[in-house]
Image (cartoon, rainbow, N blue to C red):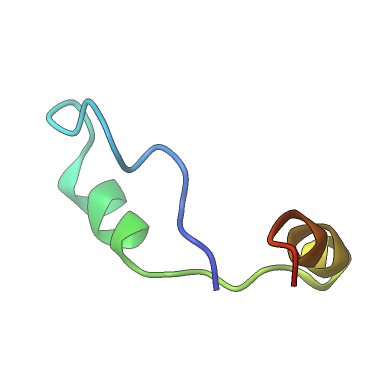
Length: 42
């Protein structure tokens, strides 16, 4: 699982629809899995 980018600051300018989509977590893609694991030292 990962968080979406652009969801932490200047929230007033972003449409509600976009912000609702940013609330949900997203899955890490298969191609990035090894890279993320290495960054997290797992």
